[in-house]
Length: 194
Length: 439
Image 1 (cartoon, rainbow over the protein chains, first blue to last red):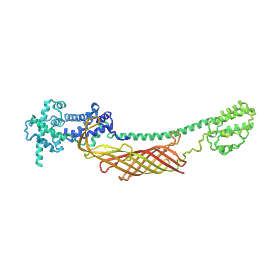
Image 2: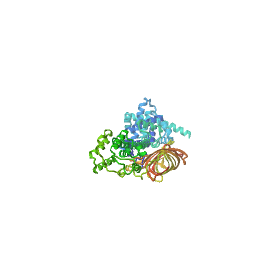
Image 3: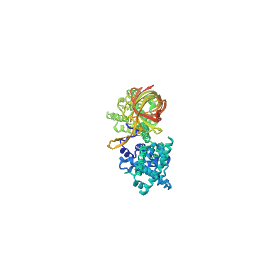
Image 4: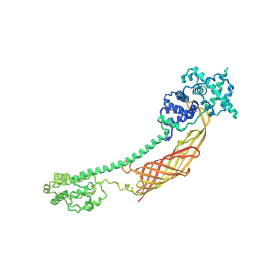
C-alpha cells in the first residue's frame, strides 16, 4: 500500500516524464535532485550569495516552465544546467551596467609556472576561490565560468552572450589574466601565512 | 606542441574542474517555497494527498451519518404515510384511528357489548356515527352479540397492534359470506350498508335500513383471520439507547508515517526506504476499553506501533553505475542508516458512535473520535483523530459484536533526538469489539 507515500521514480526519464505531467511529488523529487548542484553553479556565476539565490530561484522556475520542451529526458542533467547558466547570463545582462574592463593586464608577465596556478587552486578553500572569482568584473566572470569550468567553446559563448567570437576570446584572456593575478596574490599571501 | 597560453589554460581548467565539478551548495528551505509559490505548486504535495484522503474519509463519515438519519427519517415518514392512508380509508368507513380500525368496525355490531376501557381509548368513533349506528342497531337488533366477547378477543390480540388494509378486505369478504349464506338481505342492501357506512354514516338511509328485515347468521369473528404485520418475537429490537454499555475492542493496525526533515546543517540525506509490505515492522495493535452512554464512548486505550525506515547520509564519493536502460549514471555514495523505534501509547479517547437501525444498512455503525495519549517511549503527548465504520451484530439482548475498518491519524509529530527527523504516524486497521449493555 502506497497510501500517503510519495512515489519512487525508477529512472531519471520516468521522473522527467512525471514532471511533464505536472505531478507534484515528481516536481519535489526533481527539485531535491538538482537543488544543491544548481545552487553551486549559481554561486560561481553570481557576485554575492543573495544574487546566487535570485538566479537559482529564477532558473528553477524557468526549468519547470520549460520542462515540457525536453524531448530527450536522458540528457536532462546538462539541459537543466544550461538553463540555469543562461538565467545567470540574462540576470547580469539585465542588472550590470557597462563596466570599465581592465586592459592594462594584456601584457601581464607570468611570474608563475602554469602548474603553480593549479597547485594554488588546489590549496585554496572553495569559499576563498569563489570569493576570488566573484571579485572579477561580471563579463570576465561569465566567460571564465563558461570557458574554463563549464567547458563551452568561444563560438558557443559568443552566441550565448551575443558577442563576436573574437570578443569572447579577448575578454576571456583579460579575465583569465586578472584571475591569475589574484591567484598569485592569494598564493603569496597563503604562502606567507603558512 | 602546446603554447604557454594553452598550458596555462589547461592547468587552470583542470584545477578549477577539480574544485567545482562536484561543488554543491545546499539552498535555504525558503527558496523552495518561493519557487513553488511562483509555480503555484504546494511545497509539500504529501499534505495535499493527505488532505484529500482525510477529506474523503470525513465526507464518507458525514454522508454516512446523513444517510443513516435520512433513511431512518424516510422510514418513519413512510410508516406514518401508510398509517395516514389507512386512516383515511378507515376514517371514511368508521372514523376510527388506523391501528384500531378493526376494533372500531367490529364495535359497530355489538351495540350492547361493553367496551373495554383500553379499546375505548383506542377508538374514537365520532359521536354522530355512534349515534347513527346505535339507532340502526336499536331499531333492528340486527346483530347478535358474538359468542366470544370482544374484550377477550382484544386481549388475545393484544400483541398484534398493527392491522393492515387487508383487514378491510377480510371484513368485506365476510359480509359477502354472510350474504351468500342465504340471508334475506339482498346483496345490494349489504353493499349499501357497507358502502354507505364507508362513505358517510350521516348519509345512510336510516328508514330504508330500518324497514329491511336483516337476519344475519350468528357469526363469531374468527380472530385467526386477522393478519398482523408484527414481526417475529425473536427479533431483538434495540431499545437500549439510553442504557450504559461496556465496551472492549482490539485492532491490528498497519502503520504509515510521514517523515519531515528539519534543518540539516549541510548534511544531505538520500535514498529513503520505507517498508512496503505488511510485516512485523509495520504492524501495530491497539486495545480499548470503556463505557458508552447516549452514543458517546469514553475509552481507555493502549497501543503499540513501530516506526522503521532506512536512509543514507550522502558522501563526497560517486560511482558510475548502469541503470535499467543500460546507460551509465553517476550515483552518489552514502552511509546507510536504519531507524527503528517502538512507540507505546497510553491514553484516552472520546468517540461519537452512531448506529443505523433501519432496514437499509441495518445495524451499521460509524465512529468519529478524538484521542489524547502519551508515548511512553519518547515521553511526548500525542493527539489523534480517529474514524471507523462497520457492523454491529447481536449476540443476545445484552451483547453485541462490532467489527469494521478503523483509521487514526496523528495530529502531532514525533521528534527524533538523534537527527532532525520528525515522524507523523497514521494507522489503518480492522477493529473488533464487544459491547455489553447494562440494563
